[in-house]
Length: 286
Ligand SMILES: Nc1nc2c(ncn2[C@@H]2O[C@H](COP(=O)(O)OP(=O)(O)OP(=O)(O)O)[C@@H](O)[C@H]2O)c(=O)[nH]1
Ligand SMILES: [Mg+2]
Ligand SMILES: [Zn+2]
Image 1 (spheres, rainbow, N blue to C red):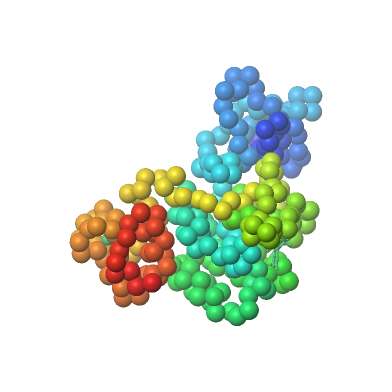
Image 2: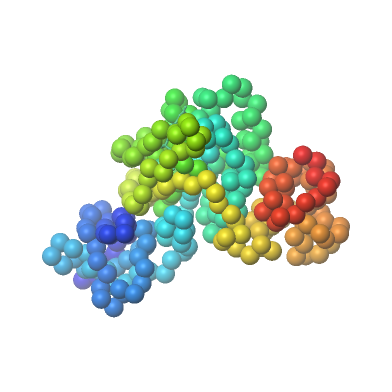
């Protein structure tokens, strides 16, 4: 009889699945005819249990695949950015957001390590910018109760953000499991990569959470055509331009540029967008 399961562990050497009904975990292998397919953590599969091993017979079509890290069918992502250590990097954040918009994954922005801030001004500034666009923004610190974050876990939830931002620390607390965490390497002022193989941990009834390694460089144009990037800066879509496919760079009568000049679109966001586009605009007000 065919059983439905989710791939909840994936490394170069081995895979495991968790049965969707009983939540039992089994080591998994692909049936011979599927050997040419790549299996991802997050793949929904069906198969049968033979000799205490789950033999995968079919992989369901994927809603999406994040390639870095490789996780399929992601519903939500916690984008964890430290306000300090490593330094807050809005360019990295905006690239992450564009990529998740592209994949139709809902991002929750976590502004972490607020305890390290001497004043709240910087936090207020960035919190306002992203909240005004319509993103959920959660200021956070290890010194506070972080359990309210649990309500944001939905379906397959992963984390993203630079190394050392606190992803594993947050998930360890939420899940009650000890995930590998690392001290930020102060000499380099960036974190070390301490997370490797991908495990999806069951959370409540039907959610699974994955810790993933951080990285400090993501370019939206690696995932999508340069001409498309503007679509995934979602607040830009509230303004109309003379040309319907305006990229808000060289074109005349650009509603987005006007909105930037009027302060309706955050200048920092547009600045990051132009950096992605490799375009210089001399009127940029910030
Ligand atoms: N001051 C302060 N330190 C924190 C906070 N959250 C995490 N840390 C520390 O930051 C360091 C890095 O945390 P990790 O959870 O390993 O970071 P990560 O994002 O998982 O890093 P990678 O796995 O390398 O991508 C650890 O020493 C944590 O104790 C916080 O809110 N405040
Ligand atoms: Mg980690
Ligand atoms: Zn435009």
